[in-house]
Length: 370
Image 1 (cartoon, rainbow, N blue to C red):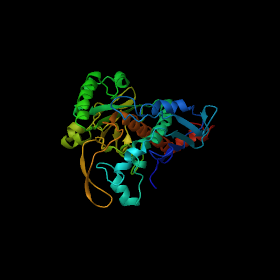
Image 2 (image 1 turned 180 degrees about the vertical axis):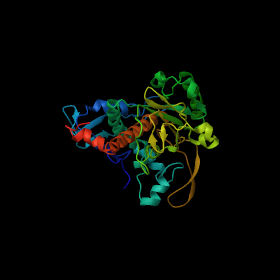
Image 3 (image 1 turned 135 degrees about the vertical axis):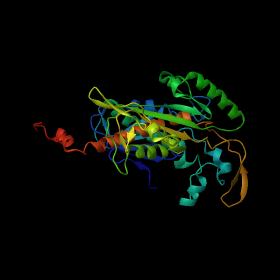
Image 4 (image 1 turned 90 degrees about the vertical axis):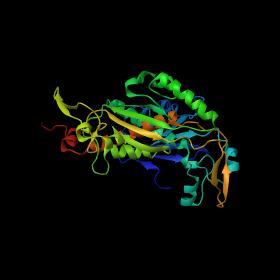
């Protein structure tokens, strides 16, 4: 199976299936000397693990991370870092009755069409548990960014029709509600709406917003590895994401040039913008301002309401999905979006180290005269 590796300089490969014995990732390109423990990774994994609230699947998984390689005496060695998480609470029997049916909204049919064989237990590689490896890589990338003074913050901007306006943001309460929304009042409103949806045997989607602060100007590799292009690919590769926008995104299509352009001004020896419609990128390069991206997350496709479908023999049938599923996957996907943004930022920061002779000289020429 191709396509399980992301990145050029800072890379990671995810492996494993939802109902297999374990799942994990191999992260390569991490510099030696970064302080790293399994607990650093665990803090990120705890934000995406199941069973955190009534709005997540009841599957009971500790999702405990084990470091198998790449770390010695609490620091990275520069060699590949292997992370493994054992699956402990699979209930494959839940899928026995529907193993011959293509679940609406899932990749059952397309995997059959591509490979001629599929793991029907929880979706195999298409399961949300694949994101464990992404989050492990993101935890490591975030530690690198922290050392560089770059901070990433992700949160739930919307659940279904309930949207938190930017003027009402309170970043301090993101971790104080199970939906990871930056406003407790809107979180309560979204929770009530979600409970009604669950009673109707249905599910909801939403929007995750992610901001990157402290990114220096000039990061990104034109033409095909632009910062915004790579962020879009990274986030769009998450299974439930159906759309990504940077800055004003689709609203820019309705604006005029005079409204959409961000005016520059000089202050304290630096170049700044008066607005940020571009979302922190120009020409595919960071412009030194806050990077803003949003991901549209589709409703959870596994719902108990009866739906039309087709079985593997081409016969029309109906299906009602039972088992343990999230009525909304947006809250658990917040850390996944954050992680994919982190690995993308680190990858492009590393690529930028070789774009000027002066950068190489600072590393290798100790006695050079300015």
